[in-house]
Length: 499
Image 1 (cartoon, rainbow, N blue to C red):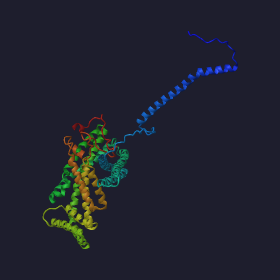
Image 2 (cartoon, rainbow, N blue to C red; image 1 turned 135 degrees about the horizontal axis):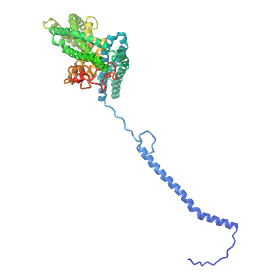
Image 3 (cartoon, one colour; image 1 turned 135 degrees about the vertical axis):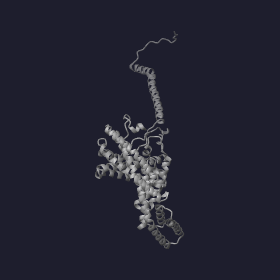
């Protein structure tokens, strides 16, 4: 309770103006606080939302993995760069692609020879065409690999150029394989081995019998070469007859198994054994033919050496009168020494290597810039062809161990044989030496397996990916050449059980 000391005043009636003023005053006094609270709440809420959005945008910018617009002042997120494959890895991949493409072509060519013997040249022509196309692609890949090994290309960005060259090698090899893969289904339709194994077996058995009869004659030829020439003359075919016999034993085993499987209605097993036998028969043919070719080359060289020596002396005499600078005098001295050594071999009573003598003459004359035609041209062709054949035969029968380097040199020798035979012998000999080194390093991983399997794996007849040697390789590229691999649930063949 309060005490009111004011004096009471009589109430008076207020007019309209007075009522309006009083009402306005009450409105101002009564609603001013509410009107201020709502705007303040709205402003505060907007501030909270703005802060929350800023935090979310900041976090999103820091964790962004795709290109976008980020807030100013915030560094954009950097995506990790893909790893760059080192050059040594790319080089190994390119080498593996060359080896695989070359193996596909060699395997396809060998099986095509059996199909052509069965159905004739006209039926085999489409597949010869596919082989030629694949060979062109592979030849281009080998040429790139040869330039790469010599340090070409070079430039401001040598590494980028090398990567491009390696990519070109892989691409060419892939194209070669694609052409063979594309022809493989039609090739299978031509042979129809699953339905007509009998006819193919007759062809393979016929070639097997012919080679078995040749083996004794070739063995006698090799013995005669050993008696007439020094060991160096026959070094390139050392062990070839024994290897041919090994392939023939492998072939007769699989021919018998193919016959048995066909009689039992196991067509797919019969096809695998047939293809394994065909591959072995083809390699036995290559080995025996290599001995016969060497005998022919030695006989031809022996006939050519006297005439080639006379022609080389004439070239030397012309070169001596043409110039007298110090470099030419040095070359003339080397030529005189080489020709004198050949003359000494001819006049001595000791056996000599006619091919080696002819090779020395060709090299001496080539250094003087002569020997492109006549008897010297024939000598260069004989030497180059002999060396290329020797290298190619060794690679063909040992391709399970031979790497890309030897195959590249062999491809270069084959190219030079058609353009400059005098220079083909050098890369061919280098290819043979490198291939022999590859075989020595490779060793014999199947020495404890089934009898005669190691030779088939070394020769590339079997794939060599399984303990028993694996399935035989067939006509086709990388995607189709392994189509003879047995299903996991298929019963094992006699050879698998023996292994």
